[in-house]
Length: 194
Image (cartoon, rainbow, N blue to C red; front, side):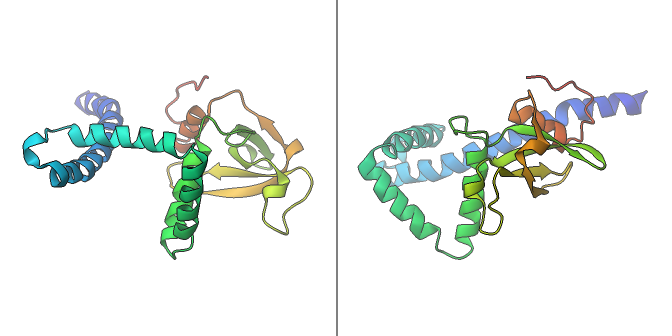
C-alpha cells in the first residue's frame, strides 16, 4: 500500500514538477539576459526581480510586430539567410525554426495535421509535415506525395515517410493531444479528445 501510494504521488507530481522546472528555467534565462542588459544600461538601482522577464516578453511581442513591416522583414530575412550559412549554427537554427513552425497555429495548409497510416503492423499516428509535393526534395516530387513524420514513443526521435495522400486518414484530434498520445505510447489510459 505504501509503495502504491508513493507511485501515485510520483505520477501526479513529476509531470508538474518537470513542467514548472522547464518554464522556470526558460524565464530565468530570459530574466538573466534582459535583466543584465537593463542593469548595464540603467544601473542596478532601477532593477527589480522579474523586470528582465517582463522586458523579454515585451521585446518578443514588439519584435513580432516589427518583422511584419516590409522594411524590417527584408533586413530580418537577410540576417536569417546569413545565419543559415554558418556551419553547425544553421543546423540548430533550421531545426528550431521547423519545430516552431510545426506548432504555429497561423500556418496555412494541412501541415501538422495528425493522420493515421495503415501499415502491415496496424495503424500508426503521424503528422503531415509537407502537404505539397512541390516542396519535397528533388527526386521525391511525385503527384500527391506528402511527408508524414512518425514520432517514436518515449524517445526524442522518429522517422519521416513519404506517402501518397490517399494512404492517410485525417484524425479529429489536436496536434498537441495526438503528439502526447504518441510520445507516451498511449500508456496514460486517458482518452485523448479534441
